[in-house]
Image (tube, rainbow, N blue to C red; front, side):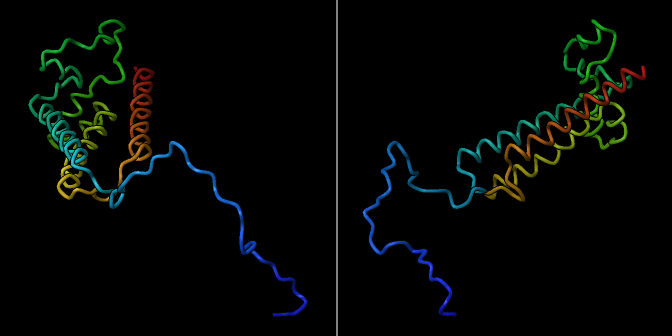
Length: 174
């Protein structure tokens, strides 16, 4: 080292009277999970419950015949006609979603997309989510990726926007 270059002491003085202030009211957990991907027993139960719930919706979609009009399939469950359609004589953004799900569970992707793009996308997500949730629950760790507000929220927002855009286009066309 060159004798002319200045020496910089970054370690500070050898002794100091400084001590950091005490953290009052700060709670440190006794044990952290092995990894953020690890599922607790409660979380595993909730993941299985979600998989069962989605499976129930998919089975319900399988139990009805897709209405050839592209909407009204939900009436096979004893539900009334779409109130929006009855009042305004126009389809609502979700008109045809049940029909799209009924097509998707039968592998009729094109028919589902023609009926309601948002519904078809939601059905695809549900069909992919059920095995992913069950595998994650059995393993006790998230499989592939860890869900968070971004990985759930952005796709959900995207599907909502697609649903609304397609609805507006359908209203404009006629």
